[in-house]
Image (cartoon, rainbow, N blue to C red; front, side):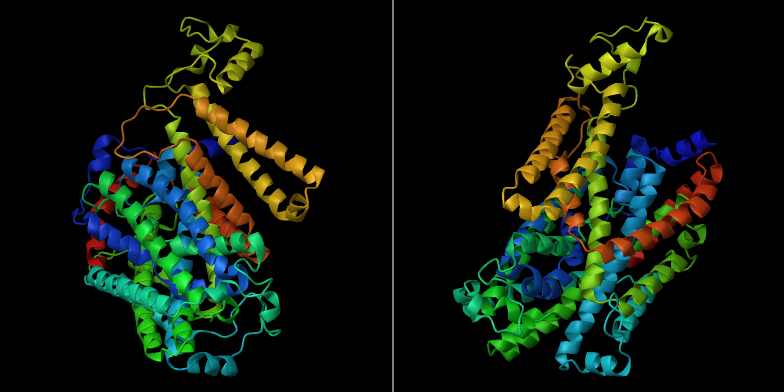
Length: 610
């Protein structure tokens, strides 16, 4: 029974070359369309809301470093997504990638986290959008709601945001009905957004004051929490914590990876669009955060509409109105971008019978997974109603960081896994020589241990992956995750002792880091798959391993309430998987294949969305 359970949980989705390239959808999305989608999905709440809250409470002017760290982590994750898009250009993003690589159970967890990412992403953008609308009417909406229906619960918002609820539900209904003009609306909003941000950077530079990066602690009014002043008022820890929050600003590029069946030449255009969109977004974030902290002291930044507030404080009220209008366009595009991939993920998981089948049922008229979209939109609207932006961003970050880490791990595993027919049998590698005639029953445990020990460093310099080398890499990736968690906790919990050069803390850190280095050396020594791809992640295994380490560290920086909320979400997912998904998911059932094949045709609803 247990063996059958493990076998079903580890089964993988199979695609041959014909399946990968075949699609019933019209491949109409060019490289420009994909870049516009990536920029529109990513460039929103981070630049218009998060930049103010992070600079005021976590990083100060050092927010530009926080954005840089978050951008590097996102770029590493983006490169890993790009390689998977070159391998499996199918709808479903990281869910499909992990299903192909590591099996059903991990794929379900990643897909479940992606649903969380898109739901929370849309909810936080809706909340940020209403914040800017509220700023245009002098906070009349929030003040009235706070007085009429205050919420006195620590982990919830101060008041219910019914405007965010209404906007979210309205746009969800439009997506469920399949709005053909949504792609045009998104493109117009994205272009307008970029134009407004360019104006903000240029105009803000004219009002810049370098002295705002050099504020002394004694010059900070007592009523403000300004830390130690200067460029890094809250220390290195504040910058790292800010990076964990700023990471959200780059979430959204993975929406491009869900267009594998609609993109023209996806193996080339998806990787390029991911890289270009991240570069464009980083330039915008870096420029805006720079001028924002130069225009106004970091401790005076507004938490909900920092850009327009900064221009109002320097006497340019007219510019503040332009920024607010641009924010509405930008956040609107970001909201559509966040909701764009959600039906795809729900549909893909429902078609594979890992979610309730009715959630992926395609409406005969609108050609959308109508019920699934409405259900997801309802949850999104409720999230926007009762949580504030900071709480939503933290919940989003942890789910996204988990998915990104798993994608990087899958890239490592695939690069050190042979293709079909390429594996050598494990019993063909013993003592450094291949001996197909050996009788496996005569082997003893000692010879297997010797073979494993030799393969850990690939002493025989094998050129092609074997079953043994693949198994070694898989175990080492798991151990690497554990070491990353230990290192992160050591740095976080004993950070002050490490800074004070405490011998015990330094020794512990050095030992763990040496173990990490040894693990990476062993992985790097293993034979690599020779499969030809249009794009491959460079610097294997360093770059994916760095992505895993950075993402793990950023996750460890998040507060305990975020982990509790995330744990509740995972528990709900596990209940669904074991009670529903596991029971009805059966790869031997022909109906599953029929459903998937039929679903490819029904997915034409995507054209309505675009």
